[in-house]
Amino acid sequence: MKHSIRIFNPDLPIMRLPFEWKGNLLEGHGRFVNHEHPFNDSFLEVLKWQFMRNPQKAEKTGDNWRLQPQRTDFLTSGNDCMVWLGHASFFIRLAGVTMLIDPVLFNVSVKKRLCALPAAAEDFKGIDYILVSHDHRDHCDAGSLKLLAQLNPEAMYLTGLRMKTLLHSLTGSNRIQEAGWYQEYRTPEQLNVYYMPTRHWGRRGISDTNKRLWGGYIIQGAGKTIYFGGDSGFGHHFTDLATIFPDIDYAILGIGAYKPEFFMSQAHMSPTDALQAFKNTAAKKMIPMHYGTFDLSDEPVGDPLRVLQQAGNKDVLAVEPGEIVQL
Image (cartoon, rainbow, N blue to C red; front, side, top):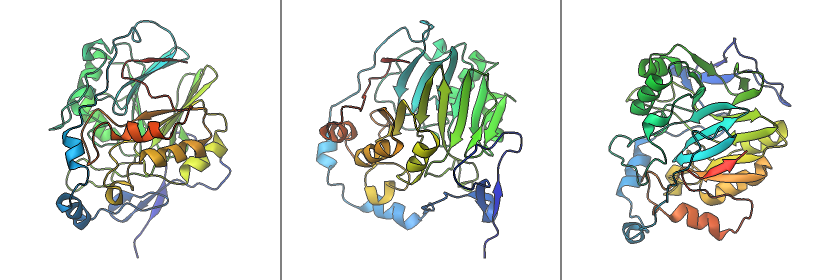
């Protein structure tokens, strides 16, 4: 029988919840687990994916659809706004506080960006908070974080449990707050930020699978509530979210890197699953992300957005990188 414990950051408050929560489950060898749908780290499943035929191979090869980044004044306008930077990266100014979520400003390893960043990387100055949802390299990019640390030496980093050592090694900063799920970070009184559950996993090397926690965020300020869903498969946490936060203005949800679904569904949602997750959160608007920037899976680049748009949901706001969403 595996030994397991529950942990959280004792320096941060746990939210008042309509259910019992004693902290994140940490099992044998110090590895975090999802509270439902345990992650299946099977090498055989990886091999099955790599050797199976992709039924959309020809379509993928011929898919010339690309995102169309826009150059706007979001960094200098001073107005509260939200801007997608591509993949899962967002710039948000809320209640006058500026933040970046999962900033990936360059290529990631051998994966090249399929769309340009809508601003020069060197222009991201004066950032108050940098949120890093988990340790995967397409969300926690070494080059981006090193540059941002040089440009923003006073920035505070908000992340998950046991991420501090990694972030300190990349940024040199000690201004790092680690949270467990359902914990609130220490922020200025005009802003509230909470770390929320996702159905995912973590790894950066060979032997560190699930040694660092993964999650999403609720960000509140100036009368607005924004949910950043992080990387996540479908799960009951979206329904729980609507109970805890019944007035979400924007749900930012991933729709890409989802095929083949037998393998990807435990970590990423399909566009159809994302629409159901959006419905379950009872949010007013959905902003899709995690597509069109890096080629990470079997579907054609434009497939996630096409599938999403075919559903015809008027409350889905598909934006281009750089496009300003006023808050």
